[in-house]
Image (cartoon, rainbow, N blue to C red; front, side, top):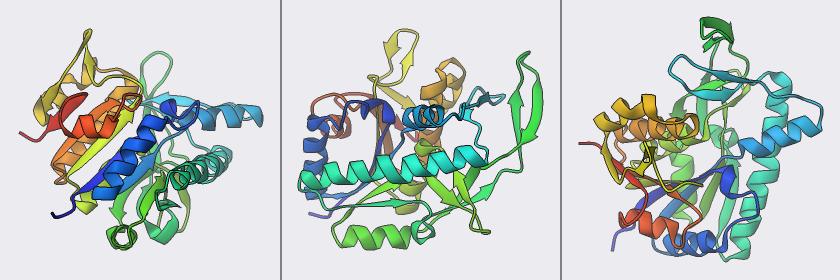
Length: 272
């Protein structure tokens, strides 16, 4: 049977008390049968570490309601240290302790994620007015070195990717982890992305939507909360790049990936 390719995104919210054993067990099962890339977040730990080092974090909101970290030079240094260091290597250690041949990389390694540094950001001020600020060290992903990932996958490694990109001037840049997963999946023409978070799926009103088309997802962006909005937006981008389906689900369930791929849990987003 031909192997499929899956991208799994895990958020820092479900790593706070260690890697759930049910997640590890299910990831190993997926890895044993198919090709898997794991992309991780970890924004909360970046914030905690920065504060412990005396660096208060600033968050900004775009006109379309996307909330993100403002990344100045000092913040980028902390972000790199935590994402590519502590979180990435701890994940690799956990996976290898479970018999998974994991290798940790960031988007810098092998020029995996090539990005353009944003010169300006349009954000909302305290009064809700649009203003332009310096772009800092935030990047927009432009290309993925899929050959690098495919080489690792063909050697039966599971790449664990930290969301740091690099521009053509070799400057490290902060990129959103959900969108990094989307671009990686798009480059690999993955069969699916499973975005694992700490909630059941996309909640509209008080109900978890079980299935949405791209058009429905776009229409509902205005009523989806900040954290989930990025995930839905990334799902739409991935589908537009040729990924077959995206499932947003809780990574705290038993067999989270298996159930998601069987459409038993979470919110399935497809291009219809």
